[in-house]
Image (cartoon, rainbow, N blue to C red; front, side, top):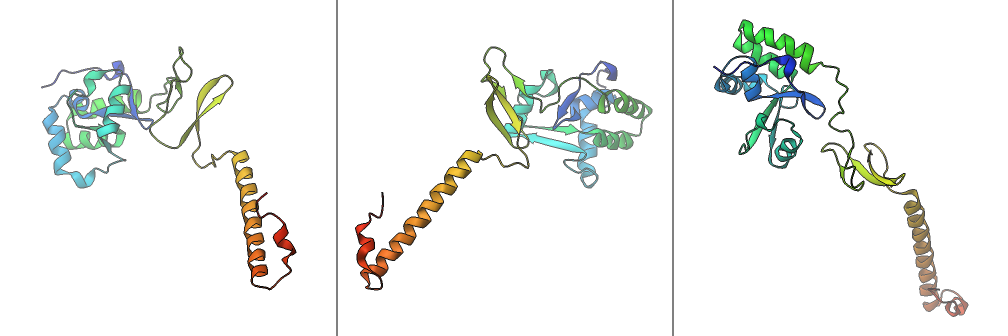
Length: 208
C-alpha cells in the first residue's frame, strides 16, 4: 500500500483556478494503489467527463503546469501526460473504491482542500518579477493584453472587450474616407476621358 498522508498538510494545487489532485496523490490519500485508480477510470470512462471530473494535460499545457508546481514530486519528470482530478472526480473514485478510508478522506478533502477559503493568489493572478517590471506571467486561459501603465508592465484580462486602440480606429476611419474620396475622383476622371463630363477636373491632381 502507499504511504498515508494528511489532508490538512496538503498545499492546494489548482488548474484553471480549480483545486485538483493527481492520480498518485489520490491513491496515497485513499490508501490504495495507483493502478486501482487507473483501472476504475478505464472501466468507467462513460462516468468521467473531461473538464468536469478531470483534466488531462499533455504537451505545452503539461510543461506549464509543471513549472507552476510548488511540489515537483506530484508529477514525474518524464511523464508525457497527467490526469488531474476535480472534487467530483475524487468523489467518483471514493464511491468506486467503497472503503471507509476513501470516504473519510474525501470528506476531509471537501472541507480542507476543494472548498478551502485560501487567501493565496489564484492561478490567473498577475505575477510580476520585482527586479525587472517587464517580466510578467501571462495566464494560460482567456485573452490577456500586456500594457505599460503607471511605470510598469501589467497584464489585463480583455475577454469580451475590444482591445483595438481607439486612436487606431479613428486613423483607420480617416484613411478609409480618403480612399473612398480618391476612388470617387478616379471615377469622375474616367467619365471625363469618356466624354461624359467637363475636362476641368483633369487639371486637379488626383493625389495631393
